[in-house]
Length: 285
Image (cartoon, rainbow, N blue to C red):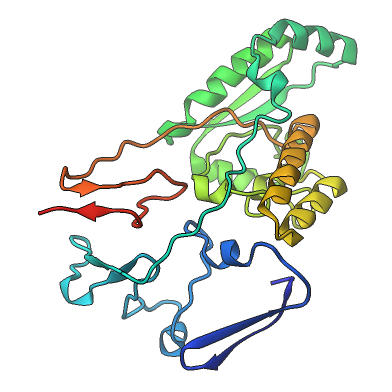
């Protein structure tokens, strides 16, 4: 909302958004498909008390919600929106700055650099949740690699809720803080440098856990948001990624995919940052 001058209902079918200055991610901001979604709804639904379920579901985009066939917890039916037209933009994917990460086998070099740094043996506090299958192996592997490089490591075995609570502490590790934890995101939450909060350079006020203070990063993210050119955005995104690696703001370990299945009668099912993607789908009897 920092770029918003006003947001109001011009008439019964129109919402008018006026900006203070140019902003290149308007559609991405109002169309985000994952967490923190800016839903639009009628006033009568928006005023539903926080503790009361929304009494009515309204579909949007490529499909329309069929209320008459909805069975909570069992069945949801959508019908195709024949007026929907998908958008096309170039992908932001790049390997810029990742050379030291992707080449691997860097333990010997890390051991040499650590010895030269004057490391005093202070333990690295690593948070290790044991109740989340997808996050359980990484701390074990990382602890072993850190030890091979010469670090002393304190693996704090706990549950995920305790990790969530402790990672919010900005105190030193010996006072309840931490040095490292692992998490994962769905693609839609890291699809561009603005929505990817883990690369924020805002520091201890407004930044994400770890709180890197990187004004250059914030300037580049701001430039990305203001750009209206997909080609320019891709160039800025590559520079941002280099900064992420250079400053070790966070380390991406890879990606994994959840298995999906659909009937043979469905065709045109697409991959994407959020599932399911409804456009391009065809159905035969």
